[in-house]
Image (cartoon, rainbow, N blue to C red; front, top):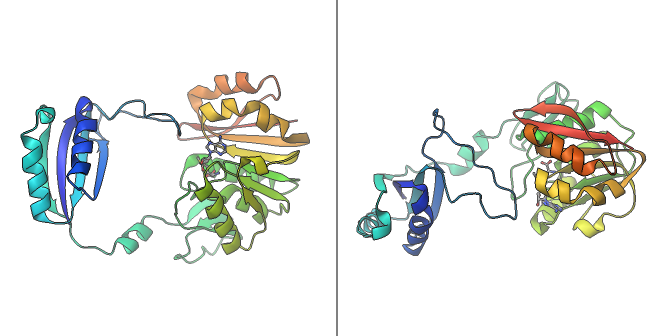
Length: 293
Ligand SMILES: C[S@@+](CC[C@H](N)C(=O)[O-])C[C@H]1O[C@@H](n2cnc3c(N)ncnc32)[C@H](O)[C@@H]1O
């Protein structure tokens, strides 16, 4: 395969991306051309919402083509378009054949949640000190343990150690939190997500880990729970405040993640009519907020 790399200003990303797709690119990726430099710009988007901007101030657009001719033709056609003004070709290069499966696998090492609790891909040996573990491979749904928000929820689960009551994992993704709770003894677990692929993924991952849980769409969450876990993002968490709080049983716990440090106050305010949230963990600019009823 051959990759055509372009440098584009923000205003050109959409037109160039659409043109590359029309030119039968196998894939088109857009990254911050200033990543890992002083000029890097964070660009956060909420799921279900349009992206805050089309791209970075300077984006590197990489399109993959099956042959050198196809990539060269795309390059020649793009360079004569009006909308290519301000863009520039960075290069056209052959992508060396690799064992992509092995390469992808090599990027996922076991993740330590606590010294005794690990998330381990199926192709890795279990670390000797892992007294508890979840076997999980990266798949279609979010939640491999590599993101700080997931890790903080799992740390909370490990720290509590048991006595969860009924567990609700709201926005379960891969099911990692529900499975984690099961590994610490939770027995009655509902895991729900708006994405049917996440529900399926949770079912398969639970089965692979020998864990019993009920996975379904959000309406499957019914009644009160001793533990309600929701790692989503600040905006949906605010919308879900009355619903999530209504699921927390007397003496139960609410655990929220997907919140940036600067969003703590708005979350506290959104939940204040029902439960008093407090920050109970922090990692890489993300926080964990919890409340007890
Ligand atoms: C950041 S992932 C978290 C996955 C996993 N629980 C973890 O901690 O790694 C958020 C998940 O919430 C789901 N989600 C987003 N909005 C939702 C909503 N309103 N109701 C239920 N699930 C939602 C997404 O589909 C996604 O799978």
